[in-house]
Amino acid sequence: MIIAIDGPAASGKGTLARRLAAHFNLRHLDTGLTYRAVAAALLAQGLPLGDEAVAIEIARHLDLGKMDKNALSAHEVGEAASRVAVLGGLREELVRLQKEFAATPPGAVLDGRDIGTVVCPDATVKLFVTAAPEARARRRTEEMLSKGQEAEFASVLDDLKRRDLRDSQRTVAPMRQADDAHLLDTTEMDIETAFKAAVDIVSRTC
Ligand code: C5P
Image (cartoon, rainbow, N blue to C red):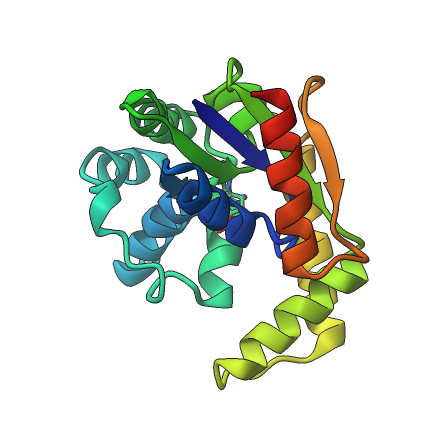
């Protein structure tokens, strides 16, 4: 069984993916971390984010089991990840790793931007999780403040909108809802309600 979850930043898709994986006893891959890991390595080496040859080399040596979610969670790393994510050759390399992960028994939950459209077009069930930009910016601001990071609602909202635009307008594998994906709009939902709705969709489909 493969559950494909896509959607914009701070839509709640990551939390849903993790909880669905635990609920259905599946492995989980946050594919955003793969783009973040490559971006963070380029930043650490002071290299341009458009250096595709080096980016591909970094991706070839990526160990999915060793990606440090906390170290990669910084706002700047997310921004940089969305810049490297436009590189077609890099995407090919990361998609190969992600497909391998998905194909390993007993199945998996993958979340990202192109899971239902590119990485797992034959997934058992596909969800496109979204929420109004203001709701997502509010959640992201609260999350950053709770971690002791600086955050201002207006600039978080601007950043999210800019990232959504870049992710949905790039030529290679733009973020979009797959034709056969179920839409889950979490604007008015807390995480518990969203989780129940997601379990419901998955159980009905499988
Ligand atoms: O989901 P997260 O915010 O960690 O993703 C960081 C960036 O990585 C996204 O803004 C997007 O540009 C890119 N990404 C992607 N395809 C995926 C997952 C993430 O292009 N499957």
